[in-house]
Length: 331
Image 1 (cartoon, rainbow, N blue to C red):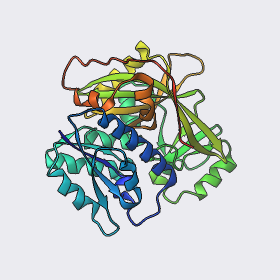
Image 2: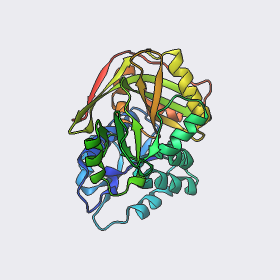
Image 3: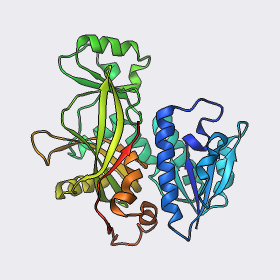
Image 4: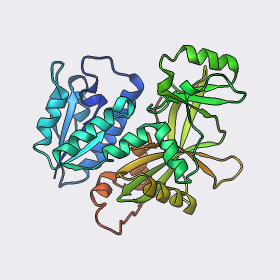
């Protein structure tokens, strides 16, 4: 099988621009882990787009690299490569419709897409739409409103973040009226931001795979977040730090039914209640690889690429060969 891998940050998405440091770090980590998984599958012939500044990423891998130069049209390069491959694995941020747009290009080509559909990406990329979808399906989530509809500070702790943000980018915790006023001065388009109550609890994520309305939990991870000057930063992930419980399996099954088009690897961000171990709120749904993916092969011995390629072979056999906790450092 000829597989085209396109990671937006390293693959030319910031051609002629300064790389966003955090996105580049996470993008490169995930891309290397994806290439590692592909290298364990002899039948794969990997095609890879890499911007000139990032071409060293391919060193040591048996892959065919198309180097993106400063003057290149990356969309045209991508379309040209699509014609010669059997399947595509996309990795891109949801913000500004980036992942949705590239996904739609693959769908229009008729090539096999190993990631979520453009419709699922469009829904999950919009945190306000996601809230309404989950609320309608009776899935526990966090009350969400547009920041532009919030005219004044209300007592309590709040989280303000972009409606389509990735990770902790431009995400603030507001503890007072002064914080609220100060944060608003940093935001020029409040209609593109949401506000949610700040919930205390353990910040977890689930690494999952989805296929045709079904979902499977591979492992439970913890996200190590810090807040400095009211801004959130994701510093690391502890992969496979807690056991998968029936309640988490039930939650993922509900999500699989509520959102059509979830396919392949998906990350689910959760908050675990400090009062009840099996009470969770869904924070976000990431329709792509996440930072926790980087540690899964070491933690479980599961090859995610191989697993996704086998999704049509039901019943799906998920067989971890080890059970370790792995730390993935991002900063």
